[in-house]
Length: 135
Image (tube, rainbow, N blue to C red):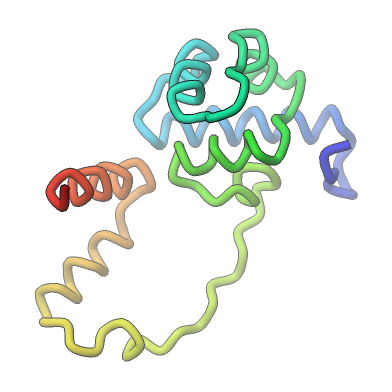
């Protein structure tokens, strides 16, 4: 079993997961289609590639990927694995703003706050751009 949520049966759990997966794909700017998921996943996975049928089962409420695959899918989509798997957002850890604001110029602080306010798909675009500029 995949660590089921106590209040949901497996069928409901698979259905809820499939909906979260499809929405996360759309939020990341992807079409929520098995062929898209299979291609993007296989480009990044170092193990045995997944088939169209596996990706289809994940999106069509038939199965939930194993933990290693789930982690990669979550990373690909810019979402936390536990949020993708269970739909549970962890409470934010209170951190003093001074911990990361120290030494930053006001415009840098404003830029970081604007970044954090973006939807996941836009944050991914910004991360990709920064990575490209850094290299």
